[in-house]
Length: 89
Image 1 (cartoon, rainbow, N blue to C red):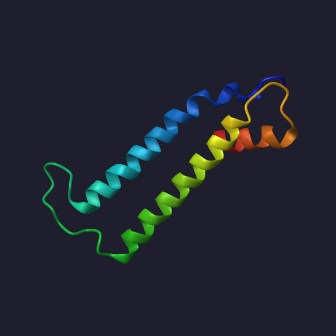
Image 2 (tube, rainbow, N blue to C red):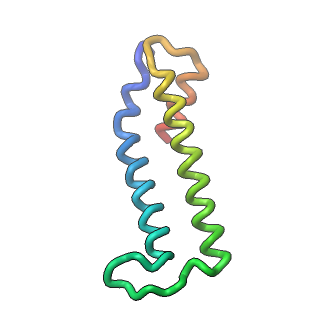
């Protein structure tokens, strides 16, 4: 493949959706969503762990995507193509 990174053009949209979901979750647990009474929902360890896992996954995804995009170019080697495929998944 001469330029296989072209299929990565939609992935920033999905990353934006994932970031928005994380931001909403944090705001919800802090009681900062309009129309919802402020209740301390973040005090439970299960929710803290779930949000931490969301953050870790989001940061891993961003790191992989930025690496794949920085390597984008014609005639990539096999590792670069595999990183691009992984970033798309």
